[in-house]
Length: 536
Image (cartoon, rainbow, N blue to C red; front, side, top):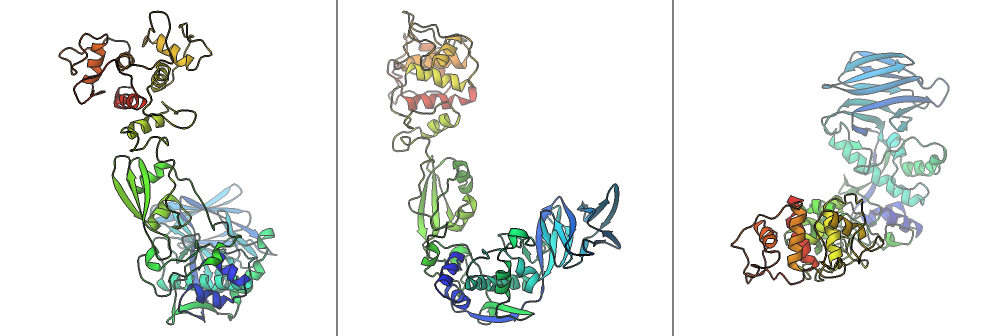
């Protein structure tokens, strides 16, 4: 059942039974006994829980805590803390400056119904009793024990209490059936409970008060509609309680059970749900930005660059999505796995999935460059931010000022004390600081005429010189002949070129040449820096 769909159907005049029968196929709506005790885990695996009380009537506020064979009395002036002690619990009751402690297998809390509000952490309860027990996963669980018929259902907060009566009654019947199935299955050892307080089961709210109590009488009336003092209405299939699952909305069509949980359930069939797409539903359409790192982790890949919906469910949700990494590796998730691991609102995701943030720049893809990984690293390290228009320009030849910026950022952006000493670079020039640093580090001396030539495109041999001086901290390269390339002997920077080749920073061209006088592209510069990352 979609809750916004239930509201729309109620607005249109449908009864609670009609709403339930629309979303749960082939069911009946029947009265069943519902006065069983339900155990609700309200604080799971906490290092400790704190208990306090507030009096709501004359003589209220007192409570007792039984630990093993000891019973501690407490009042509104008491603060009770329960924590783990080996395989047991330790209770500390403090009144003013006096603290009494007791240890036992569990702590059983009893308080005066209708006159005392028991607070467990940040929630308060008027009815039932409480228990604090060791959690198998560590810490302690706090569990409320309440009568399902009213003490539990009256405090279920899964639908706005201002909604139409028929929608509230349908929600109450679904919530009752859901909880009864959990009770019938027995206590779960993982939580010492039948249900959790939360979206994994159902939200069991704090006792309403003030503005928070608005509409509560309407909800309580819906809980009791067509019932008795010990029974209430539930959806059943073939005489058995159904698993009355529900969500806030459906995206226009509900799902078959096998597309969500993997098993066929006859009453959980996909049905059209245009009712959940009305303008009042804030989730009728949605978008969400998921960080690339979370996508990588979800699919177990590095640098995911493409997400493709390969199969849809009967209800038009995502059945399978395939991710492709920057290296071409692929991995898949089911729609439900994708929803949970990426934190999506539902599996109703448009196709194609917008993935503008999966590539480092819009003009850097496997179709435009062979160096996507290297350019992505350059961006992630903050060595480049690309051009003002958001592109990188992988095939553009790199300028000498851009090379200065790349190296300066790769060095960790150290402080620069002096101004650049070139006739064509002043303190207001673009990259003046980076060029001054390059000069201070003697990575460049500029041209013989005293200029730096910031806009000139750098040659491959000059790049080799810059890189060796940068990586060797001005020490001379130690490469010796024979050189790896056929066209560098006798060139100005032959030793520098040979050194970067020896270190695996360049492989040259396929014909065995280096082409020292050729201009170097921005993508090639990214590759050289990426390969040198272990030396930075």
